[in-house]
Image (tube, rainbow, N blue to C red; front, side, top):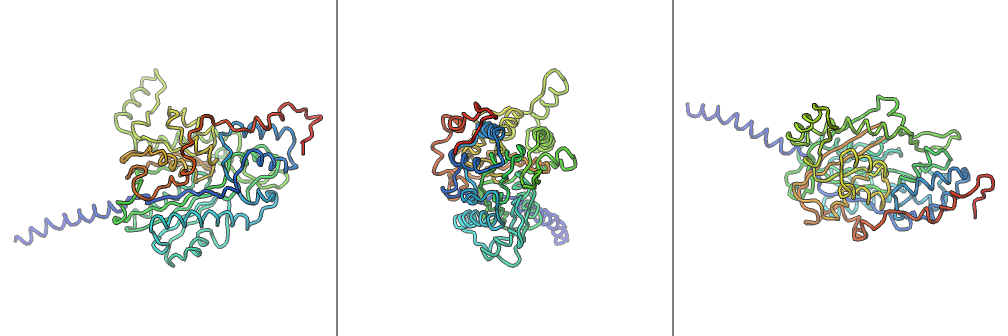
Length: 452
C-alpha cells in the first residue's frame, strides 16, 4: 500500500520535473556575435563619392542637387564601405561573381573570427540561417557556407531572400521556434546584404537615394539552448514580435526592387514609405507592449487615454533600459525617438552606427548593439529593445535580457568598434559634402558643365 501511494505521488512529480526540465531548455540565448569590418581600401570618402557620381552619365544638375541634399542630411560619415566593383569603376556592369565575392569576403572573415573566438567547431552547428535579400545563387548561400566550413550532413539550413532590413529578427525567430522543439542545439545566423548587383546607375530619384544610404556590412551570430553553454551566453531572448503589412498594397509597394523606365535595376523608395513604416510600427508596439511593460504602466496609459484630455504616451523606459534602433536613415531614428520620447543618450548608438557604418540593411541592429557594448552601457539584467523595418512592409521587434555585463569575459560583438570607439560620439556629425560640393546649388541649368 505504501508503495502504491508513493507511486501515485512520484508520477505527477516526475511529470512536473520533466515539464520544467524541458521548458528551461527552450530558451534562446546569444553565445556571441561578430560584425563585419571590410578592408580600408573599400572606404567611401567624400572625394571618391563625388567621382562615383560624376561617372554616372545619366545624371544632370537636378540630380546632383538632389544627391547633395540627400548626402548632407543623411547622417552618414566618411568611414562607410562599398563593394569592390564600385572602386573598379564597374557599378554599371556588375556580375554574379561580384555579388558572390562580396559575400565570401564577409563570410570568411566574420564567421571564421566568431567560431575561433567562441571555440565552437563547424561540425557542432545544428542550424544555419542566412538572410541576404537581394542575391539569390545556386547552390544557395547556405550551401556555400556549409561547403566552405565542411559542416555536418544533417545540418538544417534556411536561406532567406527578399526579407529586407528586418530579416535578422526573422532569422532569430526561426532559431527560437526550433529551440522550442529541440534541446541542446547550436545555431548560426548570418545576416547581410549584397550591394554589388544592386548599385543603381540610372537617374530615378526614388532609386538613386538607396546609393546614398546603403553600405556594405554584415553580422554572424551564434545562438544556443544548450544548458552546458548557458553560463557563457551574453543575451537571452525574452520576446519577439513580427508585424507584416504585405496585404496592404500601399505598404507592399513602398519599398521594392524593380527596373526603371530604361530597364536599369534598382531599389525604389516611395514617398509614402514614412507613412507605411509608421503604421507597421504602431501595430507592432501595440502587440509587444503588454509583453514587456509593467502592469502599472499599462494601467496608467489606459487611465490617461480614457480621460481623453491628454495625448497618452507609453513610457517604454519602464520596461526596457536600452533601445537598439535600425539605422534606416536619420529620419527613421528621429521618428522613433519622437514616438517613444527617447533622449539623445538613447538614440546615440543608432546615430553613431549610421555615421560610422551607414545602413547595412538587416545587420545594422548588431552594429548598434556592439556600440552599446563597446561603451560598456549594458549591465546584467538590463533589457534591450530591438526595432527593425523592412520591405514587405514589415516591422519586427524583440527584447533581449543582458546575461553578462559588457566587457566581462571573452567574446563580444563590440570588437568591430575597437579602433574608433574612443572618438565617438564626435563633436559634430556634419559631413564635408556641402563644403566640397555646395557650389552645385549656385549653378545655372542653362550653362552648367560638370568640371573634369
